Amino acid sequence: MAWMYILECKDGTFYVGSTRDLHGRVEMHMAGNGAAYTRRRLPVKLVHAVEFESVAEAFAFEKQVQGWSHAKRQALIDGDWERIKQLSKKKRRG
Image (tube, rainbow, N blue to C red; front, side, top):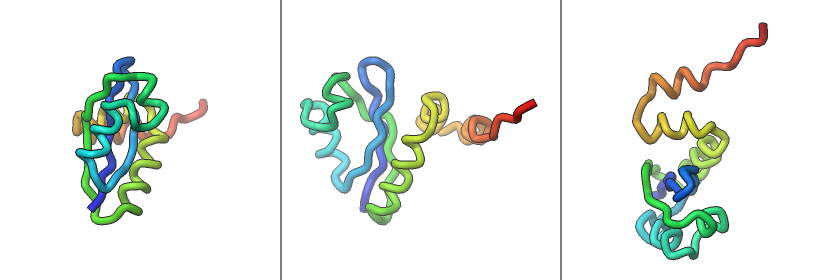
């Protein structure tokens, strides 16, 4: 099993990662031993996690969510699938 997770940093930004050991990885981030991004923005808190069958699936979803806006990530955290769909629509050039 593997996890895609989102941490909220003290500055309100989100960090997206993936791991096999969710509890251990979150503890590493909180202790300042995680990614450089989170080390500069402590404290962090776990706000969302999704379990996958494989590391490849978790990593693929991590990469997808990393490309999302803050608003779209917040909608995922909130479980607001309608908002995710709205935010996913391509903007039309007029």
